Amino acid sequence: MEDQQISQSGQSPSLPSTSESHLEVVVDDEVAGPSALWVKPCLPCRSSRKREWTSESEGDSDDDSPGIFDSVPWVESGLLPETTGLKRKRESSTESEDELEDLESELNHPWDVESLCGFKMKLKKRRMNSVQPEHHEVFKRLLEDPVVKRFLAWDKNLRVSDKYLLSMVIAYFSRAGLFSWQYQRIHFFLALYLANDMEEDNQAPKQEIFRFLYGKSYAQRPLFHKLRYQFICSMDWNTRVSKEECEEIQAYDPELWVWGRDRTLIA
Image 1: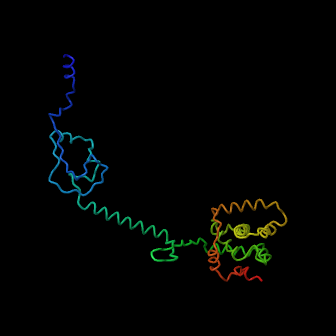
Image 2: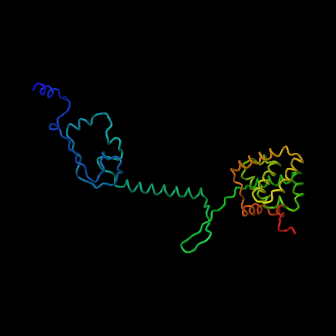
Image 3: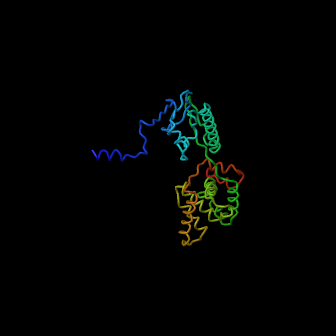
């Protein structure tokens, strides 16, 4: 009996009894209350019922510590403005339209309609041309090099330097990423050697490039292959050039004399 009396008297007097104070909360069932903060707020129906608080809870609200409603800025008096959802829909639709317009302008419509059959549409990706006028100017400048002139004059049968292989030289110049003044004689022969690697089955004629560059010496050939590897890496291994791209390069200046180097015209 004494222990029971001590335990009863030892209870903390600061904790109020449930019979002394009662907190009654009446919340509209259609409104997401602060106990479910993860619920997206919606447009509630207006209700005449309000939250009822006891005098004790009003005294607790004078505390400086932030409450639940302070962390939820869109909640005020249990109701939301009726136009909030509509306004957000209009803003989201406007933002989505702006994003679509920006995306279309960035892509610049890279797809063309190749054929249309009923409800089926076949699209063809448009090739983006990276060849700039300065790459054509570099090519023309290197054509005036004496070693390049002698090499082109030697290749009368066009086994190493027909018009398509020379067009690939310009395409490689546009992909290597060098400045115009950096391209020298060695870059012309590196690009031409690589073009023969990609397109020609007979690899023997291209070996004459070494004779025009280094004479009969074989000492410089390993350095040439090392530079060729670096040249390929500068293009990110993008060494394939289509026939359409070659013809587009030739159409930039159709009067250039090297575009007359056509194998089909050789008897």
